[in-house]
Image 1 (cartoon, rainbow, N blue to C red):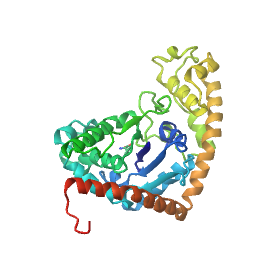
Image 2: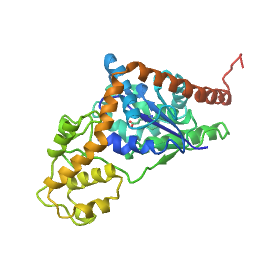
Image 3: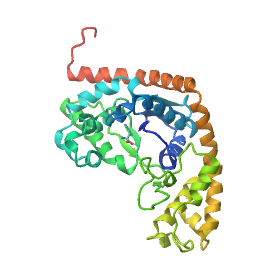
Image 4: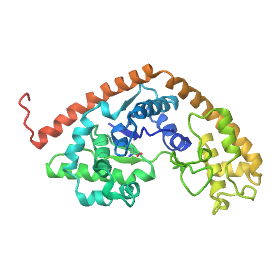
Length: 334
Ligand code: TRP
């Protein structure tokens, strides 16, 4: 059986990059796979989180998942800290993974920066917790972006070493799931850098919660270059802003980039931006409205997360017990 697991950090604004690169594609999986989507609050606290904001960011991501079209009945949607088995398995994986493996993780180096002596131990061990997230459910497939591929590799290494050390075939080796054309949404202000919630300029990103006017304004203000649109995809070479806007259009329209380029060949940006803005508003504004509505209803969101956690625990606990048994932990109750 195929089982999908993915995690989203509860660290504020979900944006168009999250929507087109992840959430929108996950909606397509819900009928064919058993899917677990986890708001990874234990990962979030590897860097400082304001306690009053953590709960609201967790609800916000849950609202975003549901507003994007993930049905909380067909999918298991929950926050990580409610299912203590994640932390338990992560500890065991701290004892399986090797220092040398973690020393090679590029994301730690980026996030810790120059002052790595002062980074939390949790930030360093972050990939072990991510491996635990996935392997706790014996997930077979993990939809991940480019930036998480190395962590998924590590999860496979941990699974393999565990199976090997204990001479069992307990963990499947999780595969990355590449969904459609990899949509890499770039900043609206700089086509060379990824759209990001940490960019100080609000105009660099479209947030999932943005209303129609805000979406239209941000697209109007998006950076372009002086030329008209090219006739072919090859003509996008060296034109990162044009490439980004056309890619966004293609992803929103679910159309191949070649067709989108052909349909708008030779147009001025002003005209194209108007069409893009209409499409973006049509697709995204209803998602934003639904997300805002859900965020007003904390009771409902909490009930979804509680129900998801119950269903997640029901899978996690027997798997964790199997691991304990293999490792030889004494359990007098049996
Ligand atoms: N590390 C992922 C990110 O920052 C989030 C994550 C945590 C995750 N656990 C996961 C993704 C398990 C996939 C599977 O985006």
